[in-house]
Image 1 (cartoon, rainbow, N blue to C red):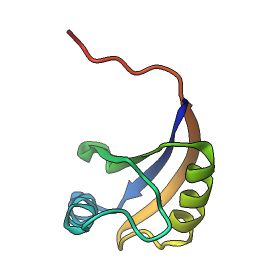
Image 2: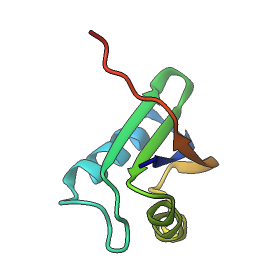
Image 3: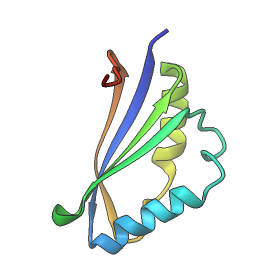
Image 4: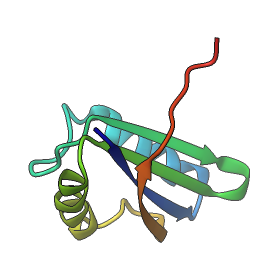
Length: 96
């Protein structure tokens, strides 16, 4: 069964804004209500003040519903959403 990811890119006013995002996500006990996510990954290039949040979902329907909830949330202070992509995961491999 295919899985899906919602990838959101953020522009940050500072590295502190990215750190605050990571702390906020890490402090949560799980995804927000209405978000059936199986994994979250936060990536950043602090030198360029950019961050990506990748949320993985077990189905396209879960991604669409979760995306509505996440899209209605305001980004933390100092962060601006620059793009949102919803993608099907076609391949995942673990290095040997």
